[in-house]
Amino acid sequence: MSLILKQILAYLPHSRVTLAAVLTCVMLVGTAGSVAAAGLEVRDIRIGVHDGATRFVVDLSDKVEPRVFGLPDPFRVVIDLPEVNFSLSEERIGDGAGLISKLRYGLFRPGTSRFVLDLTTPAKVAKQFLLRPEGGKPWRLVLDIQPTTRADFIASMRPKPDTAPRVASKPPPPLSRPPNEKPVVVIDAGHGGVDPGAIGVSGVYEKKIALDYSRDVAKRLRATGLYKVVMTRDRDIFLPLRERVRIARAAGADLFLSLHANTHPKRATKGFSVYTLSTRASDKEAAALAALENKSDVIGGVDLDGYSDDVQNILIDFAQAKTNELSVKFARGNLVGEIGQRARLLGRPWRSAGFAVLKAPDVPSVLLELGYISNPAEERLLMSKAHREKMSAAIVRAVGAYFKETQNARL
Image 1: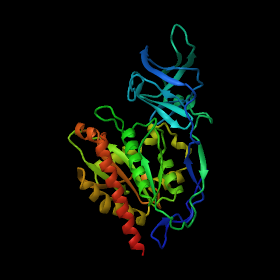
Image 2: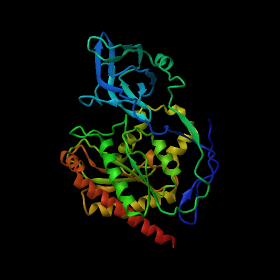
Image 3: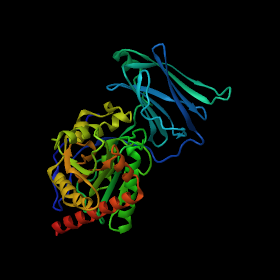
Image 4: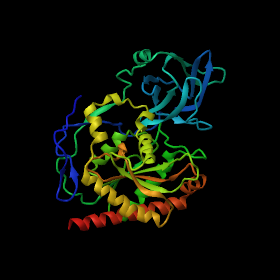
């Protein structure tokens, strides 16, 4: 499908920016909510190496029909199962051996749980079989992975139509939207499901901290009665970056907040920071962070070839000055001030880079790094209820100040 951007964005009198015309936007979407297949559990995961081949074994509570395919550049094996409960004695995310450099798993979309196996080299699934329970052992899904060439990987591991990520055409929001009766605030909990995000010194996942804080901020915003609040995710599920942007635009968002936690090679590094969109990063660290966050879809096992170049370019390169002006106003003028009174700030707490999740062209958007889970003291702080409540309350006050100032500017 080839999509063509027909016109540039236009300013509206009430200082919001909308798309003047876009024919359609291709987005990854999930189906309506579902629950894990009744009683279906993943009970253990094992990786073994023998004679140059790598065996991946999943212990299951019942029979499954997996869908297995590969994605290149970087090379990955993807295993889709019905939605399952991961009843493991210990987390195995990050483990690898042999041809598998790293392992991730989690809820990919409602009804589908996913394993993503990062490969050290092009490799194909030479054997795949399901062993029935016997001798006290459960159902076992077994994959034998062997090295191959890039050409053979692409030919033999290509996703079949029913295993490719689902895409759907979604119309853009209306050409001209009247102001919302109440400001619409979209809260985006970073990462989720098969994408754990950063991993803290104690083993805590960024996706959990992001969701805990997002729920608290959303609850407090709703309690004011002043806003309509939308969460991009309210459980541990993977959401492509494009879907997060789509949710914000479809909701007619007046403000988009994406919550994250950071890591740094230097464990002494700590403090809150906030990022806005820029085609040129404010510094090397901001550029590196944006590059890492923008790999979220790759980590989740998304095949980006499902999108035309036109749409990718729109989502990656297109942003408008007025929207970014409002984003910077909220980040620098409201958020940094409120947080700075109650928590430690990173040096130069406002920065900018090309974060894909901030690229809704008509929604002021910021990405909040709540702190560094690579710092033992700050990780403990971020995991505490008292600190979460203090930070969430400060974020809500910043939101209130922003809308009061922008409303006054329109009068």
